[in-house]
Image 1: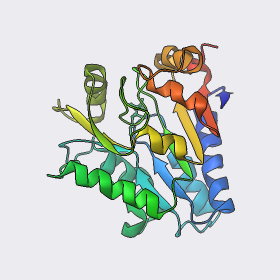
Image 2: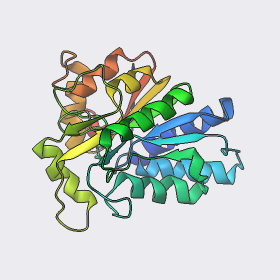
Image 3: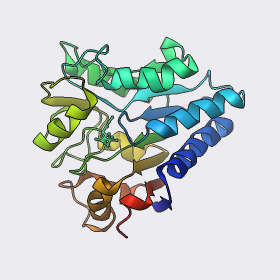
Image 4: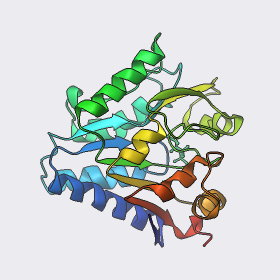
Length: 239
Ligand code: F6R
């Protein structure tokens, strides 16, 4: 695992976008698993702009959502589906068979997990997984205490995740569970990138990099990944 620190959020986002584009140039049918949320948003903007400006062919790439809030419709602007649609799918005009989401409204969430597990398997695994980090160390919705051996699964969210998660929604929204890519998929991805910016993330980034690797801080598992980068801005760096 490498830690890469950038002076600004813009520089950090530029570097992430560069890695994403480089992957497509090397592997035109790359499989991306992408987080929603504030941290990767600018990187996605730079990524889509670069692909379009440089006329890079990304039509054979596959995109898979990292997670979703259970019970939230895709039309809700707070959903992960909506975020990826606005930030990746629409700007790149991605074909519907090249983007895969969890359906948070599904009556059978277990089947929803199997659906995404199967897509990952059929695509021979993830080439890259891009995640943010929660203040409790979650990656995706892998909350403290999660098993590292899980593929896609449904999980109860901690209060801190529910409270912080309100920032994505236009109005107070009842959240209780998430459906998410598991840590097994995370560890098996060919490359993992964790993005964090801002002073708020400094403490959890410090713990991620220095605490004993344990599932009370799920993000610590990244230190066991064979090809991972923790990419942060100066504010998130506590040394
Ligand atoms: C979102 C996700 C979450 C976020 C994390 C940080 O798809 O999986 O784990 O990455 O909560 O959120 P932001 O980036 O908004 O600070």
